[in-house]
Amino acid sequence: MNGGGQAGPRLLRSVRDGVATFTLNRPHRLNAMDHGPGSLQRELVEALEEADRDDDVRCCVITGAGRAFCSGGELGAAGALTSSSDWYWFLRAEDEDNERIRRLRKPTIGAINGLCYGAGLIMAAHFDILVACESARIGLIETRFGGTGVDVLAYHVGPQWAKFLALSGELLSARRAAEIGLVLAVFPDEEFPGKVADLARRIAAMPPSGVQMNRRVVNGAMDHMGWGVQKDVALALNAVANGDMPRAATPDGRRFAELMRQDWEAFKRARDEPFADPWLP
Image (cartoon, rainbow, N blue to C red; front, top):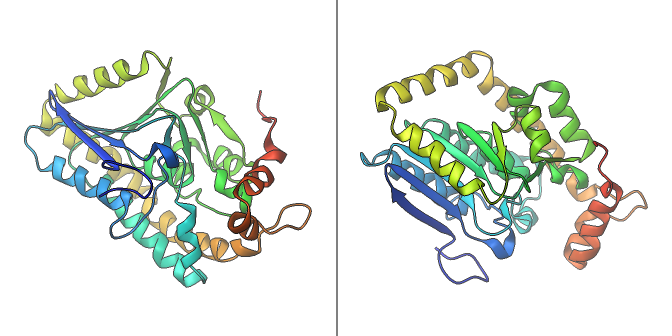
């Protein structure tokens, strides 16, 4: 299925030496992700499940075309959500698709090749291993205009860093993301594709049954630590906050929702100018 404004498929797929690679292919939209039936997220999940059933595939890699892995949720979709209840069921469907990724038998590697924000970051938090290129930038940019999505990040980085990401609007460098455990490793951009391929090859060379069971052991530990309970709380509170998002305003009183509809460049300036200088060194 094609994304609007582009020629060719919005999801690219290839299989080589036991590794299936999936590339989000909406570079003109920085690989923004829509959700639900017919969405890019659903297409990716169904493609991963198909690979999971393929005996020739032992490991999956997910990456993005262009300068972004995924810039977050497709902002235009929010206009159809008019209440907290609408948001709850929308976010519930998004989360159920992310959980389908976690329930795969075979491991997934997120190759963070550039910008990774919001819904893209939350989806990536459901992959087994994340690696990033040097130029990647990672964060919850939606919180700058009243959105939410911190979701399960505390499981990966601890409560203080999760709060910092959600409350400050700060975008992390790839190196900082590795320091706090959000990604496993960072490589120079020119070395990145080869390092990702080598990691996937190594996993694909492991005995499949052991890989699958060891993966489930770790996921089981996360479940016993309250992964599902935390998600239920997060979905409810995210729906409340996102339901209030149309009233979110800039410091001078302009509403982000109006700016988004009327002047996209003004919206981006209002969203990003207060954070132009990173707080972290």
